[in-house]
Image (cartoon, rainbow, N blue to C red; front, top):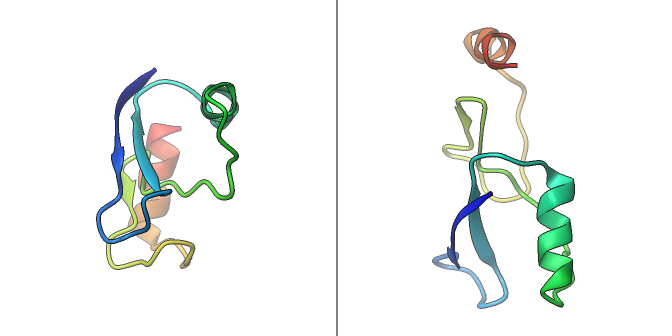
Length: 75
């Protein structure tokens, strides 16, 4: 279920932000494709209690020990 949709501040107009509470990447791609848009990249900014604070879009970093424990708790 998509809760909200908006343009991403500081990026081109073809970047959109979607907030989903329940669903998977397959559901998201199906919804966007049915609207006639092509997906170039999907980037999660929040998942299972983890955020991408201080990371640019497309960048990754190893999880800290505390974050690994959080992931095990949520999943």
